[in-house]
Image (cartoon, helix red, strand yellow):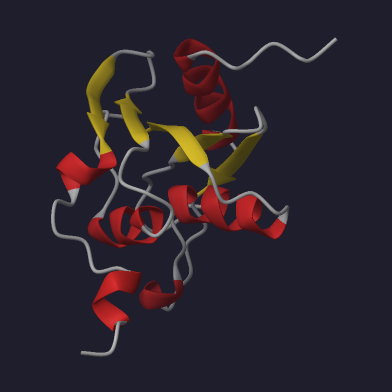
Length: 136
């Protein structure tokens, strides 16, 4: 019997839980992400900060990179949990767009209240992608 697919609420809860494992001593802004792939697997990520700020990595990118490392490239839904329900940053939107604009993005706060529910293509409408690397 196949495992039950994660619901939006399941993803929010998993993102809420993994948020507690974030390493955010500089911003005090822990973020958790849970990414559902078309195979039904869920990959989690928590932000990891660094004293050299540009080397910090967001939760959403960690979840996406972990999924890719496990052979997944077809993403369906990502839930992101922050203290105030903020949307993914521009860098995360760009990375996620590599895998398709139909990804459903859910941004929720620590209480599970959804602040944003949108397709990625609506959050980054003119994303740079493989088509932009094509030779003229």
